[in-house]
Each structure stands twice: as C-alpha cells, then as structure tokens.
Image 1 (cartoon, rainbow, N blue to C red):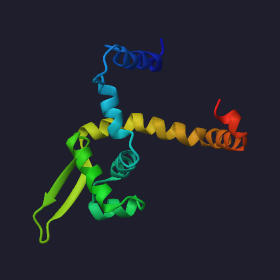
Image 2 (image 1 turned 30 degrees about the horizontal axis):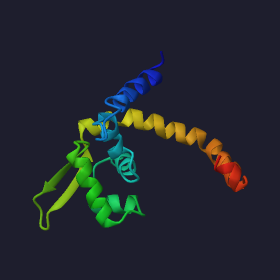
Image 3 (image 1 turned 90 degrees about the vertical axis):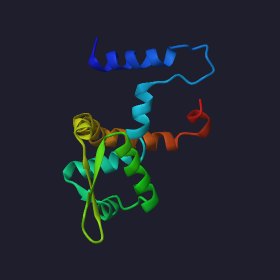
Image 4 (image 1 turned 180 degrees about the vertical axis):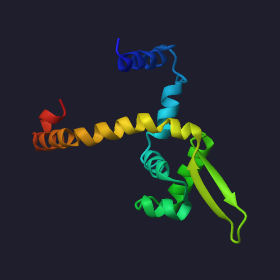
Length: 141
C-alpha cells in the first residue's frame, strides 16, 4: 500500500470512530490541518522559512492580511508550537518571529504541496475554465 493510501486509511479510521455518535469525534489530523490549512498560516510559515522576521516585515510580505488577522494567526502558530516569538529589550521593544524546530519539520511536506500546486496550476486553471463555462444544471449534478 502506498504511503498516501496508508495515511488516508489512518485518517478515515478517525472519521468512522463512533459513527453513531452525534458528538464530533476528536480527530488529531483535522485538528492540525485546521491550523496549517487556513488561508494565512501557510503563507506566514513560507515567509518565515526564509528567515526570522518582525511583525511589520511579515505584514509587508503578506500584503493582503490585516494587522488583526496577522496578530491572531501568529498567536495561533505560536500556541501550536510552529513558531517562536522573541522579544528584544530595546526601546521600544522589538519582536521577532521565527520557525520553531516543529515548524521547520513542516517545510518538507509543505514544499511538496507547493511543488504540486506549481506543477498542476495549469490543469486546475483549465478545469475551472471548463466548469465555469458549463451550463449551470451540468455543474450541479
């Protein structure tokens, strides 16, 4: 069995555990993917992969993120142990963010996803064009 199918099988076991229960099942995979799969986390992790950066540098690098969302995403990434926050005793204090060892361990799988997206973008774009050009009743079936 391929590594991909093995991982999918492990994930599906979490999904099927206690299928009769109304309560949501705790799934570690979904818990982690909820963090790294959001719109901003992956962009910030990619930016921090290059070098440690200050808040304002990150805000300039990811131009369309609001300061509020940047602050929240950085806190969430720090909470999950993917980045570290260093406060320097300057006046005013300066803060720098960098990838933690755990965050660095995410770079290889993230690089595979980036590579896949880069190689497959034309296929995805073509599929979008086909879908958008199809009659509405065909799209929904």
